[in-house]
Image (cartoon, rainbow, N blue to C red; front, side):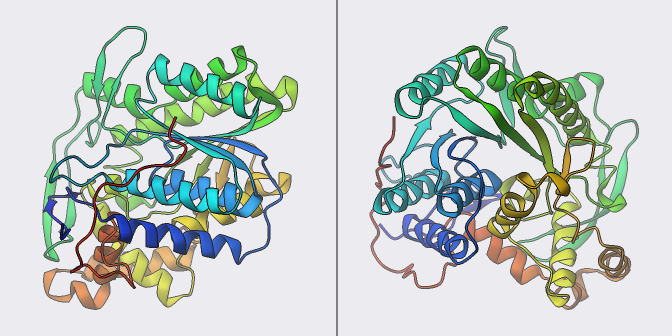
Length: 394
């Protein structure tokens, strides 16, 4: 079949297997060209098929030579419907790992469920014995609690009062004003239940009880803080409430793991184009302006560059963390001179000058590359088999 991008708002409903494979190849080549990471040996990545979770798995495997298990919720191709990008990404990762003698396994299912946790634990016991790094990078709009059966749905809203500011349709480049009504108390509760730290803690608790978490193990989850311009919709909004819960969970996990030399961190990462960030009003315009400024200053990093820096300079470097269980690799984004220039452009940007003041082209390209499109060296007019198997799928 000829696979073309089909979009609906901030979602692309198709994915290209060869384009996804090309993206994985480029990330692997980047990591292999860097200095070897002195870090983990056996790694579990929960939420391993896209974005920071995928980049973490690549950094661990091809940077540190680690054995990996990836857990993710993706679907295979069916009929005229392509597989999800995460499925194709994971297939390409497993193929590359296998070709280079790395041990890796993939589990597809609901990471929030007790069944997938139990399946993962059994796999760790049979293949690795124990893991010494657990990366938690789950991005989902919904979660069903494994014990109560309640299904929670997250929302992207301010808290307390309505919020108005500029936003951008990244497909058309139109800059407009948006206004978002505040969340209800129940919407805040549900967003915390989906995106907070409860499930992260459940994973670590069950790994500990099963005896498959090594002494001295590290666990890390991912967050974002960002500038004041995004705080009402992000850091001070429903997502921010959930991220606060995530960070509090890091302290609880640190206390739990410290007796055996373990560590728990939240890595505060740079703003990047992801399917999740594309859904947040205001954020695509901010990221487009940020990209332009950081590229002009030679400071731009993509997912794999961020994760390589996290693993090589921070996660296993005791001098690179603050006392609050946080690792700040958003430091380049939050530099005073970078933010001052972004805010200057923010005040000026409108539809007529969006291409001049921002990196809208780069934003669009990054968005479509999430789904395997606009990758160099791929013939998108060629007939492509959408049915791709994932090696070592458990």
